[in-house]
Image 1 (cartoon, rainbow, N blue to C red):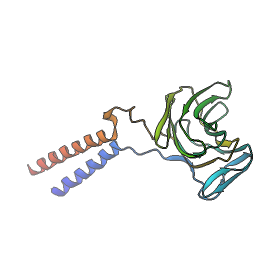
Image 2 (cartoon, rainbow, N blue to C red):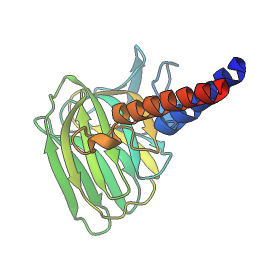
Image 3 (cartoon, one colour):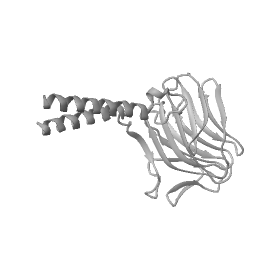
Image 4 (cartoon, one colour):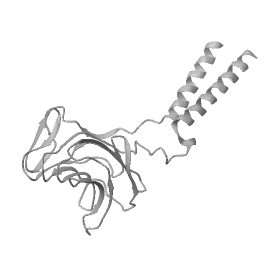
Length: 227
C-alpha cells in the first residue's frame, strides 16, 4: 500500500514539474566556429579568418559575410560581438524588412529597416566599441524587441510592423577588425524582463504552488490509504 502511495506521489511530482517548467524551445541554428572553419557561410566582400574559434574580419575596409538564416522572425538571437568601426549584424535579413544590430564606432543601435520604402525604427543602447559584448536580442509576436548586453536589459521597445521570416544572417564591418562568435538562434523568447511579468507568473511562485499542491495531495493519499 505504501509502495503504491509513493508511486502516485512521484507521478504527481513529475506532472507538476512538467507544467511549471515547460521545455525550452530547441535551438534552430547555431555556429561557434570551434571547428576552425566557416563552412555554410559565403564571403560577399573582403576576407575573413577563424582564429581561436572566432570569426574575424580581414584587414580590408569592407568585409561582408552571409549565411542562410533559419527560424522565424520572432525568437531569441544570441551572439558575442567585437565591434570596430561601422559594424552591423543582420540577425533577420530579407528583401522586405531587416532587423539589425548596428555599432557606428561610438554608439549601438537595434533597428528595423524597411528595405522597400527606406523607412526604419531605431533604438540606441549602451555598449563599448572594441570590446566584447554578449548580446541577446528577443522579439515576440507583438513586435516587442528587447536587447540584453552582458545580461543587462539595455533596450526595450515595440515595433509591430510585420517582418517576414529571414532569408539570411549577415555580419559586416567597414572599418577596423571586428569579430563574432557563439551565435545561437532560438524560435522562442527565452529571456523576459523581470519587471514585465506579474509575481504569479514567475517561476518561483509557480514552483511554490506546485510544491504545496504535491504535499497536500501526498497527505491526502496517505490518509486515505491508512483509512
